[in-house]
Amino acid sequence: MTLRTGLAAALAAAGLALCGCASSAPAASGHDHSGGAAAATVSAAKQKYAGLNLAEPYRRPIFTLTDTAGKPFDFRAVTGGRPTLLFFGYTRCPDVCPTTMADIAVALRGVDKSLAQKVQVVFVTTDPSHDTPAVLGEYLHRFDADLPTSFIGLTGKQDVVDQAQLSAGVPLAEDNGKTHSSLLLLYGKDDAAHVAFDAGNTPQDIATDLRLVAGAS
Image 1 (cartoon, helix red, strand yellow):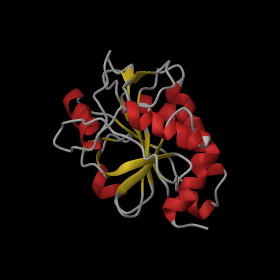
Image 2 (tube, one colour):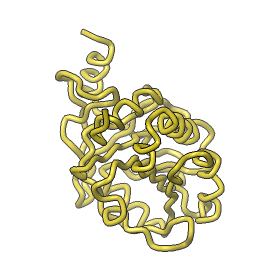
Image 3 (cartoon, one colour):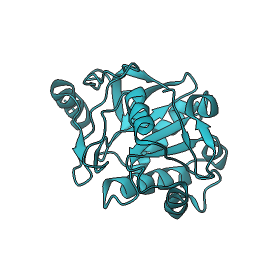
Image 4 (cartoon, helix red, strand yellow):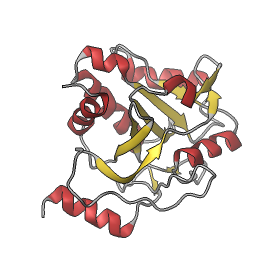
């Protein structure tokens, strides 16, 4: 049994759990868009992706929040049909969140510019009381400054942020947003996520799977 297959089998047996930013464990998620977050599993079968192969695909969620320009952003309408990376976190996170954003940036620098231009990266804050549009914009610019497509930061009222997490199939963040899902979801042209990433994955894993999901060679 390979290390990746062994990891997948272990996660499938244990389920995926909510974790704090100091933890490297993968996050819990489900895909009941009505708000019931079922425990997700990853596939222990033959692995197609370098990231976590999801046993069942997650549908691209429906929610509308406020972007860094202060305008409404309809996630499904704007990102539909495009390769999209979605992550829930907060700007004051000391480790998992900046590491994830940095890994995405490195991955996008490692693929063809034509592919990098297609990819949308969406960061939804779990701490909307602090993460205003201006705060999010400044934070994300640290990572996307030299990339062809800017990262999208979203915030809003707490109840709408909570619903966005449930719509995406991840559990509600706790402790004022500090304990949140560490799962990075990758949606493809079919508006489904067949693969996700956690702290155990590398920028190279993300880049490899972006090429697969986008249909690039």
